[in-house]
Length: 267
Image 1 (cartoon, rainbow, N blue to C red):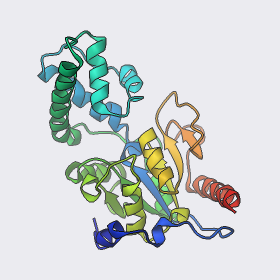
Image 2 (cartoon, one colour; image 1 turned 60 degrees about the horizontal axis):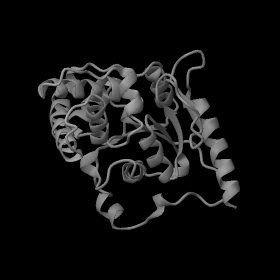
Image 3 (cartoon, rainbow, N blue to C red; image 1 turned 90 degrees about the vertical axis):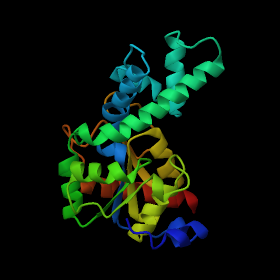
Image 4 (cartoon, rainbow, N blue to C red; image 1 turned 180 degrees about the vertical axis):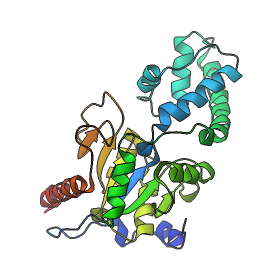
């Protein structure tokens, strides 16, 4: 990924940190995806790595999709493990022992995840391929942000959306703080050469949504089935397909409507 702007970007606040003046309008020029909006990397990737880590530590339980989705309410992964250990009566002699075991399981999971993720053959979310093709045909740029390692994130992005589609991928190596810090989204804007009012974020988690909002981006949330209403999002969908597939024209309308309201309220 290009890094020509990285030193300047980290040094201070520049034009890409600011929205266009109130009363102006900007066309949609880019869509910035969270990697977990492209595929259900939480349930089909992280969950499976945790189940392998439990087995490696001699624990005879597995996280189901339903249970794992419940635990996603806890933003810290170690807290999720500790909650499960307490629920199952494992290492309850003290909170210190529970935390130590949770840390060990997390470390094992991280190692296993990096090894397993590209072998999982993760599928794109329903409707994603057609949506990305629509974006590309309309001349709208595509970027991806992730808290993952570049070594597996870039190959996974190519696997999910194809070669030559994504302009830039911002990974954990490119930032000092990961999401929900907005650093990755701001770096993506910098690399694309646009301001926040020219882009739409598509997030796959509450953490990604917070990062996008902190970057000044209008954001759509894709989080799978049983999605609650999220007031901070311009739209919430289970996926990109269904009876009303998401298209670039929909994004242009949502983007324009959100910025019109946003700039009017700021006037």
